[in-house]
Length: 217
Image (cartoon, rainbow, N blue to C red):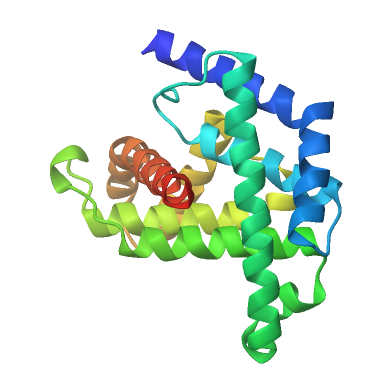
């Protein structure tokens, strides 16, 4: 477990090093031009940083094949390309259904639109995701799902501060979500949910985010 955590931290550092480097900026500029996006490379790179820190922050196991700067570059570029596709979809949504779009999305900057599209999809998938009761130590699937949704909503609200940079931050957010979901429960129930549910919530969010990335490949 300790080896996995160290490897995951190393992978995060490798990917973030690429995302904040010159190659990533050139790639972002090319993607912006290729898709005719109404945003600049800096917006795309900022959202890539948020996506990397969020997705790797909730993982419990390392990525299967990111162990060199070249691997990290491929992973980081895939995230940039996915974000570019999200921006195209967001522009299409605004063009065909401007009335239905949330006011923040319609009026805010383009990078906010990208985040909104990402978190909307993540929340939609979380609500529909299956949770195996056998893997959650007595934490009911509906409770796991509710806590995960609350936690992601909190991350979405705080995304511009990019606060969720490691697992400790994510666990704190999950603790707050447990408290909200368990508002009417007694202290013993809240303590049990904290101890039993955090790992399951983390695994659920990580699985759904992995499925999102794989689905775009």
